[in-house]
Amino acid sequence: MSRQPHSIDELQDIVSRLPSTRNEDWKYTDLASARDISSRWLAAGRESLSLALQDEVEAVTHAIDANWIVIANGELQHPVDVNGASRLDDAPSSDTALAELNAALLKDGLRLRVEDALDKPIGILMIDGTEDASVSQAYVEIEFAPGASGEIIEYHASKGDADQYANTIVSVAVGDAASARHLRVQNRAAHHVQTGHTSVSVGRDANYTMSGFDLGGGLIRNDVIIDIAAAGAEVSFDGLYLAGEGQHIDNHTRVDHRVGPARSRQEYRGILNGHCRCVWNGKAIVHEGADGTDADQANHNLLLSEKAEIDAKPELEIYTDDVKCSHGTTVGQLDETSLFYLRSRGLDKRHATQVLTHAFASDLVARMPVDAAKEALATVVEHRLAELLDSDPDTFS
Image (cartoon, rainbow, N blue to C red; front, side, top):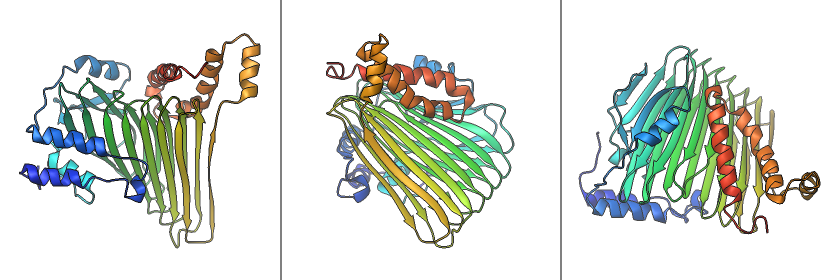
């Protein structure tokens, strides 16, 4: 890979410059653990002994019918038989410390180009598993040619008791009149760390739909940046985060409306239990001259425990007049009337809570844009909800 530092000191310098809570966009999320894991891994000579991951790979790839590509511990697994897929030989540009770290340590990048209409989804499984502390990088470029259409599944998983930090960058370009449907699932081991940056550019009269599901991980940060620079674009993206004891999940989103008319809609929902913390910061910017913009953002959170914390911040910046924009956020507990009704019908508190939390999450599961993954992901979400309800012994006391 190009532009790769050769000395430990250079790499340690990049690690030292990873975002801190002094940065306004990172005030609620401390990357101290990512810096610590990275420093220890570099000091150990960037060596980690890989675990056997075949069972975990098959569990994902056999459950969802897709053309799968596997990136294990940052390395592209061969053969890659997907049309339009190739190894990326050039390191990406580095405009932040996280991107610089990604470029410096990247083993294998992946480029996908969708030329026509896909007959089935393309799945990208990024999975890590090592016997000792490790760091992995992934970089994926996805391009939908003008008029093309298709579905992408981006699945993150991990295995093992050792400390792990994964740093992922995904770039999506949706050409004029193209239609892209993107499903992102993060289901890492409960104590692992991941930072992810997704940037999307949307062309004229193009459609981009995304759903993100954060189910695992110890410390997770997702940045989704969407650029609408052509008229007629339609963008819709959802997120569901389920956090239990000890988890920290942070979602930052930004949509730039540079021209109009165009439409964007985003809705994120969270279910939190036990001592955990989640962050949602959604921003929509309507630039001067983007007349006819229609932008809507919503965030709803269900707190099952008094120890759970959510920091929610919807933001609108509007620099033109002819627009239709709305935003809002809600934070609450289970509706006592609904709980009483279900319990009066014979359900105990746990099962009544399970019914209501399922209803809260089901809309986003039903709206996920990749039909081939709905059944499998609904099962995973149900399993995670059951774990979540049991993560705090005080929930049903």
